[in-house]
Length: 276
Image (tube, rainbow, N blue to C red; front, side, top):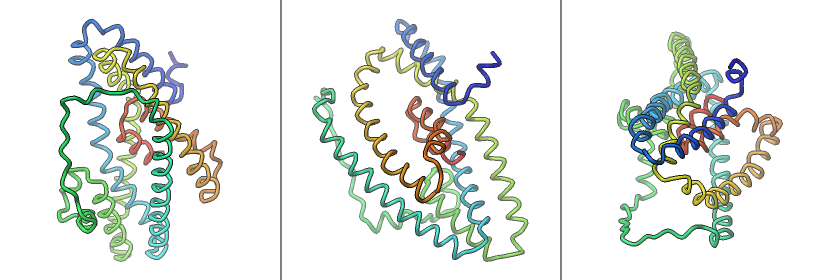
């Protein structure tokens, strides 16, 4: 039992994934049990992740900006980060388009009869830009609008640096809150094997193990593109820009990758990435 508790988080999550699939198969005859008594605990886990992601983003960015103590340095890093973001996004789009065209003949054909799609109204470029900036302090926090939360963190961080010595109590408070929410995040992540088990078991119980097989081709193609993106972008960036071993980087981020795969949760990957 002690050996099991000492296992790395990624291994625990993988074991929970396998056990969840087995439990789902065993409960195929009574999927309502999985839906009514197992799935709620998975939902609770995702709710905890949703609860923590906003304060983690807000206070970690503010703490990072404040630690630099120099507006020019922050601005320089910010510009580089934006350029890096657009470059990596462009590469990801290219890889996705190439992969989609290469593998499209392998994808399962779904029956779309009776489905109706109504496209949403197109948002202009300027409306998108305007939407990044919040018009209320609390709304971005309540709605978990990450772009607006990031903008808030940047403005507040800049203001604290410019205020100087008068902001020392605020600096201590932000650093303390950042440490507190990081610790809360660690506590929540300790529950991730249970969360994964409770999320995957109802899916298998309701849809049967065939759903895993039917999605295997799609997932295989998708993850082939993900791996290509990691090899091309992450390995190059970590080695050249971060002067860090790519092997060490992937080893440290393995829990985030395994959790995101097993729970199908983008929230999981975001929060784990911020923590790691």
